Image (cartoon, rainbow, N blue to C red):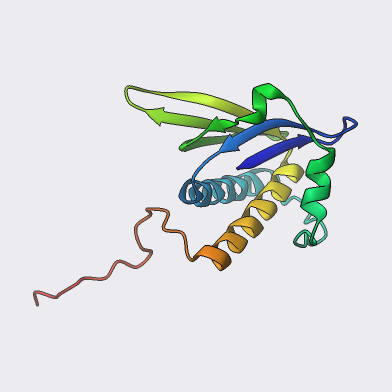
Length: 153
C-alpha cells in the first residue's frame, strides 16, 4: 500500500492511497527508476538528499496516529499497471486497473523531481524490507541472462 501524504496541512493528511501487489510494486519501482534516469539525461541530475534511514520503532505508528485519512481514500485505489511521464518540472504517475476490455486510471499523483527521488528511495527501502522478511519477489520479468536447459550443438 502506498500512501501519499500532504504534509503542509495540520494535521498531515493522506491524500491518495494505492493498493498493489508486491510484484507490481517491484515493477513500479523499476519503471520509476527508468523514467527518472531519462529525466536526468534530459534535464540534468537532481541533487541527492541526505541518506534516508529506516523508520525507528514506533515512528510509523506515531505518524499514522496523527494522520487524517478521509473516507474517500481510506480503501485506496487498486492498481495492477502504471504509467509514468515527466516534464521538466513534474512527474505524473498514473496508477491503472487493467481488466479487459479496458484499462482505467484509478489514481493520478503529480510530484516534483526531488520528491520523486524520495519516493523511489522509500519504495526501494520498503521492498528490501519486504524481501528480507518474506523472500525475493518474483515480479514476472524474464531473467536477465536466460539460460538454455539443454544445448542441441
